Length: 215
Image (cartoon, rainbow, N blue to C red; front, side, top):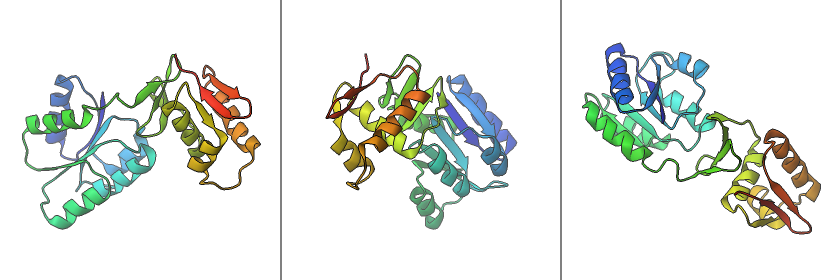
């Protein structure tokens, strides 16, 4: 599993990296928020962020994570204990809050707890493509496949109800909230998904809708 670590203090960053690597995690490290926003691929299983760091701070970084890698757990590390900082952290979507200084074993236990469910929502829809129901992201070999929001929502419904028919009405109600949508608009999105995922088996069910066949 991959963890992205954002911590400006070199010694602490190195210690966390070595400790998590020792426990079989792949760690991507950043010491500056601006560098992280510029270079991070935002495809990790979990993020560990320092709040007070140079460049973009932890609060700004988590907003990027929410947009680029939604649904992933985030642990904030900080010496701040004021209720305003803690409230803001949770409001922005952090999963856990760790007060500095802390024992590395405590961090590991929190990481293990947050990642204990990872994999339950990851469904392989082809031999190399996996769809994450939690984040509504499609992956190929660990990298995100670029799809539009509507295409990801269509794939979410098809994957969640794989090997079952998803009717046109279900698609329209879930994605377009009952707005008037022509069938060829849906068909156009399906064609684009098929073009992006060559091996995918989305069947046309005449007069009803679509079915994603997963073996």
